[in-house]
Image (tube, rainbow, N blue to C red; front, side, top):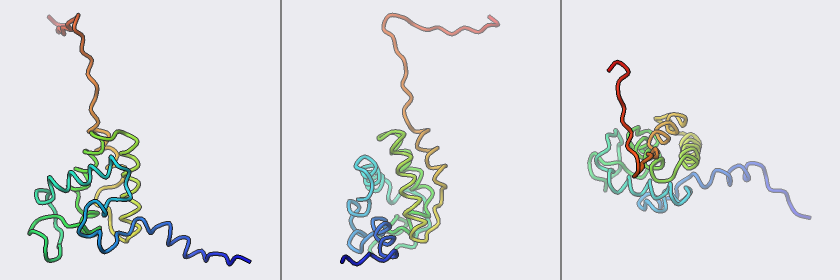
Length: 151
């Protein structure tokens, strides 16, 4: 007869993907491995390009440059500039569905690990959606001219 798995083990395994492993603390590719590919790419590119230029109040451990973000939930979950930059990148690069998915993942990961999310997930969705490029209509055969009704 098969022994049933205790409920606490099942609930632990559900949240396990949100807990970064010790070796992921120094490798951005491992740190964001639970995100879909496009979203992960945004995390990595914002990290590479803006890690030391985004305003933050992180108290990172030795080995980090002063004033730079560090790969720790305590730092990233509580850094508004980081969360907004990533949401905007996901909006621009990945689209609306990914913006919503990423906001849900980060909200669960941060609060599930006991950290305050500096920007509400609904606000992150708004930032991401605002960054989605709006298609513009162009026509080679016609030109639109706008004139004032008072002219």
